[in-house]
Length: 326
Ligand code: SF4
Image 1 (cartoon, helix red, strand yellow):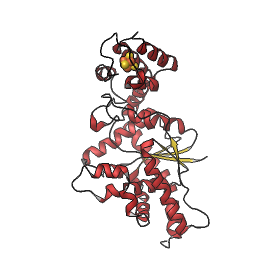
Image 2 (tube, protein in one colour):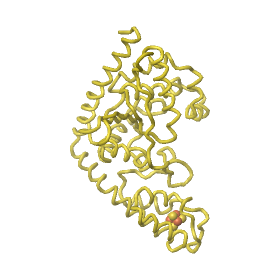
Image 3 (tube, rainbow, N blue to C red):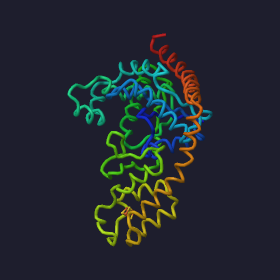
Image 4 (tube, rainbow, N blue to C red):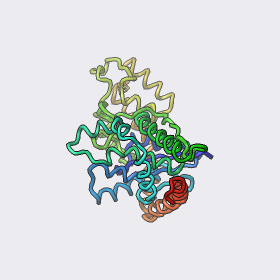
């Protein structure tokens, strides 16, 4: 069975953008691949954070992942900092990665230009990401399109290391992208990607009334000013959310009723709310069950870290031997 690795930053409870853009896909993939899913707290500390919050956010994220359907019997779910081999391999990769390649990364350039003083960790973030993936010698990585450049860097790191230390038989596989089928999920403001920092999210575990309070004023087709104006569903974020949550027949009905002005936007949003509830009710129920058994999350993470370390320590030992370090 081929192996996949994917990571997610601990920004607390998942929102539906994370769920549709990554986690729902992970749940489907865990029965087809040997899967490792990692809460990447070492990546999270490259931004501003509070230590007490980080503890809480790691736990909340683990609860959301388990509630969303990650099954610790099938997949290895663990926290990055509980497997120290990640940072050890990252250091090794730092020694073979050209500075220029890191400086060219779009995400680094975007973040760095907004900061007065740039920490080295922000620059070498993709090297740690390469270590995360290559430590498990993963064949593929489920990613969104915005992560393709970082994945290409991981492939280059593998190539460069193999050329130097395993020229005859490559030791690290060059991981392939497994593109997530759902398109980028926009926030309810319709302006930018759904993101907690922009305050335009819907939490995966939010109560139905709170979700409705957010959906009701959400941005739709800006040219549909009056109820009688025909709309263009393709430019409307509510329509794209229907495509993610509603059955195909309803998505078609939405498009027809939008173009003909048969429905108003509130009717359309009510239908979306019902579709979302169908998917989210069982997830909320599982989260409540998990909340009643506090040891369940920590047990899953401890066991996940143990299984991850079994693989990680073997890889690192072999890599060090080839480099004259062990
Ligand atoms: S009817 Fe639905 S798809 Fe059309 S603009 Fe309104 S909310 Fe968007």
